[in-house]
Amino acid sequence: MIRRWPLILVNVAGMVLFTALFMQKNNFEFLYYNAAIVLSIVPVIVLVWSTESTGNYPSWLLWALTGWGVLHMAGGLVYVGGTRLYDIDIIPLLTGVGVFRFDRLVHAVGLFLLTICLHSMKLPWRRWAIEKNTGVAGTMLIFAVLQEGLEQVGSAILPQTGVGDYIDTTGDIIADVIGIAFALLCIRLIRKEKKN
Image (cartoon, rainbow, N blue to C red; front, side, top):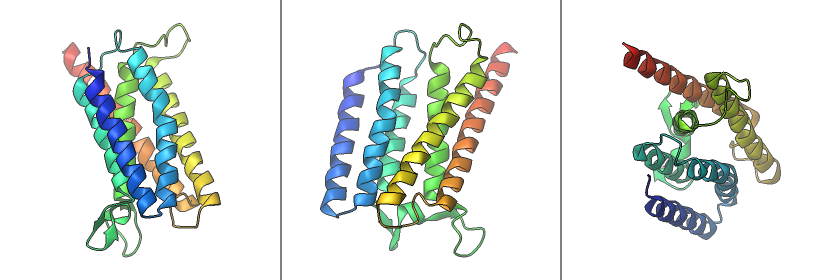
């Protein structure tokens, strides 16, 4: 059984710290995204804890999800060489075009981890007449689209900053799909290896 309290304390402390720092810097854009992440991830946390006795969650997975949340929030707060972490190009294919920014890496890693987490849950996929991998992939795609929808709302009510615009949203969804697909591929390869 996973020890809940250290995870709860680290997550709550991180959210409080980032919220305070965003408020101090009048960074309403990332304050909004902080709230959006809390709203979208809380149901996942509740689902994990309610299925903890029947799920197969390694503690590294939940700690990795916590680290992912910290990286996501740090993207709007931390600067490296005068550039916001969120905007750093990991692979600058074209000058001035953020094809694979830090943000996209965080999206891919986050959906990879969430897909593995969902796949570990003992949910009644067969009773719902859904093949497990199809159900996991569909659920994660819905999650990704809803999260990006929250970003779209943010871009409509906050000053335009390149976060949540159509190009950013498209890139984020592509990164989300890559994370989901890679997780399902890893799960398939691990299962195949175990059978042999």
